[in-house]
Length: 330
Image 1 (cartoon, one colour):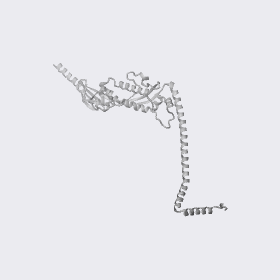
Image 2 (cartoon, rainbow, N blue to C red):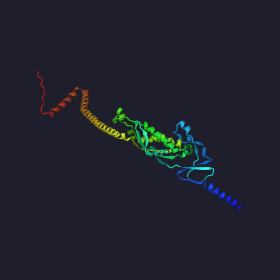
Image 3 (cartoon, rainbow, N blue to C red):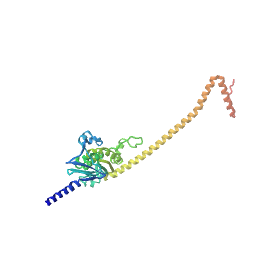
Image 4 (cartoon, rainbow, N blue to C red):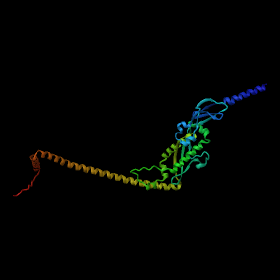
């Protein structure tokens, strides 16, 4: 009897420790938790991710494919309690950084996860270096925990495919400007795509952020930023690119100097024309005023005009030393 009572007491203690005490848990500040009951995650009614803004970037076809239920998320804090038939899944939502060349399935690929290879529009194999910042999306924990077996593998593959497609078809925006030293076929010849890629790293990063905005709705992982920091061409073409850049910079410098000299001469010519125009106007203005005065005098009668002419002659005679007059002989 005592043995039976001891067994019962032992079973009760084991049950309390195994299922009651061990059922108490907490959630850290950088974590979120989801609880399943008999393998089914607790959901928020019939709400799905299509009703959340994270699905706005999905196409109609993708909206049918990536339609996940919204789960009841357990916030940080505690202690919380779970029954033996319940399971708690904790997920860190802290932002993490990973090398963009890292392959989760084959860590030795891409030079040990250091350099990602891509082919440019010039059919050159170039190496890309950079990092990706990502975090688990709290709004789509179903996709991260249950919808995709290896979410980070899918996200990395998705990112790499978009990046390689962008590198293969990238063309720098060409703006027609007055001071553009090269245009037409010359610009196409000099416009090596690797140089364009290096000059437009910011545009490429922004393009990647826009194109990968749907990763949260697809895989439950949000890409905060892609930071492509380096684009290195093959060693055999590096010297050729350097020579092309040097020649291009020299041509641009010479043309800029010629344009500056031409602009300066145009400004000087324009100023000279303005000065001569003002001088001509200054000489014409007194004559115009005199003609106006004579017209007014003529209106007063022929005597007034003759008197005016006589007075002007007298002033001239006073200023002159010698007067030569024409004498008419009958």
